[in-house]
Image 1 (cartoon, one colour):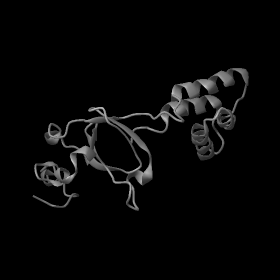
Image 2 (cartoon, helix red, strand yellow; image 1 turned 120 degrees about the vertical axis):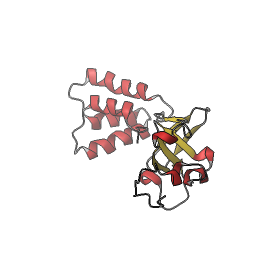
Image 3 (cartoon, one colour; image 1 turned 60 degrees about the vertical axis):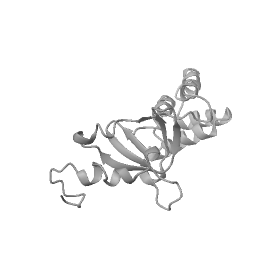
Amino acid sequence: MSMNPLDDSGDDFDWFWGPGGDVDQIEPANRVVIDGEHYMLGDNTAGMKGFGGRRFDIEFFDGRRVTTTDLWFQGVIPPKWRERFPDNARFVQPEIDAVPREQLAQIILDAAKVRRGMHGKHAADLLDEHGHAEAAELIRREVKARNGLLSAKQAAQLLLTKGGESR
């Protein structure tokens, strides 16, 4: 049995996934399994963070909800070990500023009906005026990332899809 994780010699990485393997060293409460992929919740204290510190909102099937900026991908669980590590959670979209994302998107869409040619920057300003600074900042970052090419309708769609996106 190879101890080299790059050597896929057909053992399905028993040394990693099998009983007494590396995954067993992870505190069970910190194991996240979504769609057959294994993740580990970090401790949020190390200098390096999983996924570069991106935010993830996770809902465990036991009812726990966790928001983390330190999630580490451990790999796709080989089929032979999936029974040992069944799915235990799902990614969820967070509410921004304690207002459901759908409601924020609707504010933008309603304004876009009245203001022809409404731009993503205008959508961000509108949300800011209504006290939704976090959502406004999310849109501003996307406007910048797209070199200014974001319509108000695209901004509304962004609120419905961005933030707690999968992986």
